[in-house]
Picture (cartoon, helix red, strand yellow):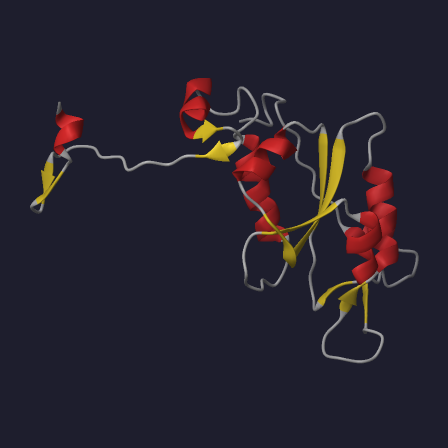
Length: 174
């Protein structure tokens, strides 16, 4: 709905569109040996450079388990941008130079390894989108749960008042 209302725009791109060889190669074996394939720097560089919109507040983010932990404060910061380019890895990893020289930030959603960066990207989209005015039903929902760029959550209850002997706290019944 947020996209239909033109509050956000989400685009997914295929790195193979920025390759020059006939096989559309986006990965290669790592220098020094090792298992698996590593995503190449050149298609990522070309993609990011062509996607950047001039005169926009933008950031380029690389998802990696070694990155800074994504949190509500970071989501709030991202919600103030005009453009967020998210680099999602696959295979064994991404050429280290992408994180050092192309991405503005390296972000992690936790201390575990995933097969790719698509799920972290979806988490960032979900978390950031709800902070954009008009995306969720009522702005006061946001104000109730977000404080000083952080996040607050408290226990909530609904009917019935007693369920299998477990009661709603009395303070909520007054």
